[in-house]
Length: 275
Image (cartoon, rainbow, N blue to C red):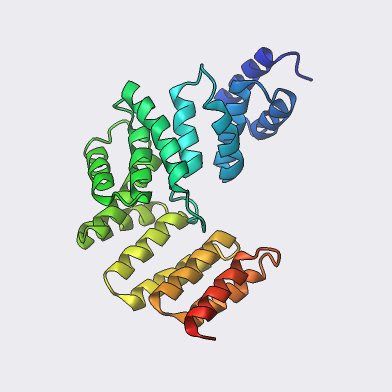
């Protein structure tokens, strides 16, 4: 039983400081009890984000953006959940719309006006620009962040490196790109998104065989993740490895027979092949 929201928040903060394992359960219960409390809602949104539930986290955080007392951490977490490209996770099979990207970029620009040195905000700004196709502008931001990364958490530095590598490769700087992304995957071999970026950069160098081998490693790394299966199948298709793509899509359909994305991917593949 929770006497009131304020006391519950004090309990939550104490448990966070002690890194207690029961924290997730408490946050969920508090959110169910006090869904209109902004601070508790933010804690629950953060929890959803940590667990990879970007959609639920975004829904909650988008509501918090209308709170006149919102703080910078809320804006950063909202941007990360809504349109961030966290290389820990497999790339999503759907992309953010131009409207969504612009909405989040507007919030970030307002925030960065108050905190121009906020590196997390600048990284998210670069990730949005990357998705909008502004590769050179994104690369410039990421380069500056790498040159001045003191004080950043290791995982955020590696995230900067991942997208620095991708933008560098897109600008034809393949040696720099490969060195940067290989540093990341050596440090974080379980980061599926970073492994995917490595595959894409290898493909940009026209080394199809090495790109195929990297994609096969990625499939072995997370065979049970639907987004990963979809990405690998699409990647094989883009490489012209149609038989491999077909097999991945057919195998992936067994993961969740109700997920129509594999059926749609197979239809697109067969249409392209004239089957």
